[in-house]
Length: 282
Image (tube, rainbow, N blue to C red; front, side, top):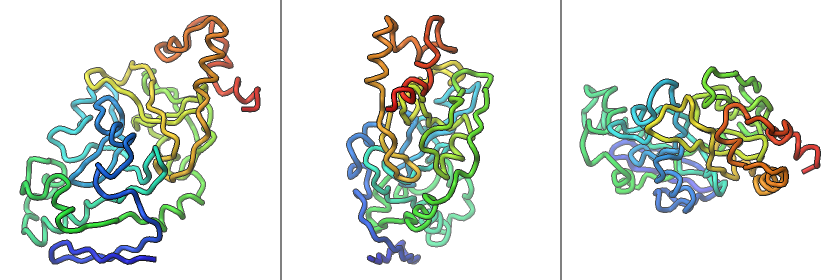
C-alpha cells in the first residue's frame, strides 16, 4: 500500500491506495475517453477545474445547451460523477472539489463568494481554473477505492422500475439490464441521466444528443462503452453486429428501430428486446 501526502497550500491530506491509475490529466486517460468528452454530442462531460467526469442530467422541455451540456459559464453541469473509465475499467483519479473549495475559502479568503464560486466558472481567481492549479500543487489521487470496492458487493440501491415517460426520448427499456449494480440503481431510477441500456443489442453507453434540440423526442442513440462507469465491471459483450445481421436478413433497416418511437410496423417484437439473443443462448 502506498500513501501520498498532498500539499494543498496550507491544507494537507493523505490518501491511501493499492492500485495505480492511468494518470491524473485528461491527456493521460484512454483515447476513447478523451474523444468522448471532446464530442459535444456525447452525454459525458469533463470538468478540468474539478477533475470530474460527469454524465449530465438533462431536464425535459429544455434545450441541452442551456443546461450546461456541454458546460459553458458553469464550472460543472448537474449529473452523476463516474468513478471508472468506461472504456478500460481503470480507476479515474477522483474529484478535487473539496480541496479547491478549502483553498478558496481558507487560504485565499474568498468564503464570501460562496456558493456562486462553486458553480460559476467566471467567478474567482483564474489561477484556480483548469487543470494547472491542481497539477502545480501536486494533488494526486483522491478516489476512495475501499468505498467503491464495497459498493460492488451491495445490491442496487433502487430496484429496476422503469417509468413509461410521457416523452419517448426519456423512455428506458422495460427489462432489467443483465448488469445492475448499486450505483446503476440510482442512474436507471432517473430518466434524466444520459446513460442508457439497449436490450436488443445488449449495450450500455452514453446518450448521443443534439444540444440544439430537446431530448424529449430525440432518438435513443448511445456511444457504447464496455465497462460500468460506477463499479468498473466488464459488461456483457455487445451483440450489435449479430443483431444487425438478423435484422437485415428480415429485409429490415437497423436504423429504423433507433429513429422510431415506438418500433415501426412490421418489426418482430423479439428483435426489439433481448428475446432474440436469450432464445439463441448468446
